[in-house]
Amino acid sequence: MLVAEDDPDVRDLVVFKLEQAGFTVVAVGDGSEALALALAEPPDLALVDVMMPGLSGLDVTRELRRHPATAQVPVIMLTARSQESDVDAGFRTGVDDYVTKPFSPRELVNRVQAVLARAST
Image 1 (tube, rainbow, N blue to C red):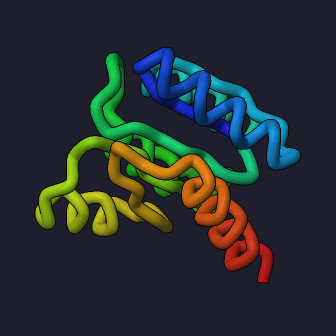
Image 2 (cartoon, rainbow, N blue to C red; image 1 turned 180 degrees about the vertical axis):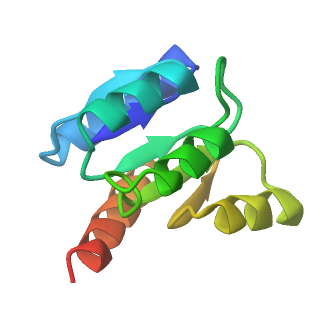
């Protein structure tokens, strides 16, 4: 699983909770690095922040959807941007779920599990 989040505190919390739930996680702090890693080794799921250095989470998602090797990778957007227009933009870009900050770590793990379950059917 790939986590792209520029805030180290949020990133560490997300990684900790996902690893505690049994997932193997690779975490990065910017969108460009996230995209490079995903294209080199497509993850089972990408969890991306919207506002990051390099590429935004929306840009990362667009690029993932554009490449055949990553077009089907489930993407969850994790962001402080909670306006209806932001959520709409995320889903138009191709995200599978949209989680706003602040978030419940337990709910995030449940959403990751649900998206992965839907993707495997």
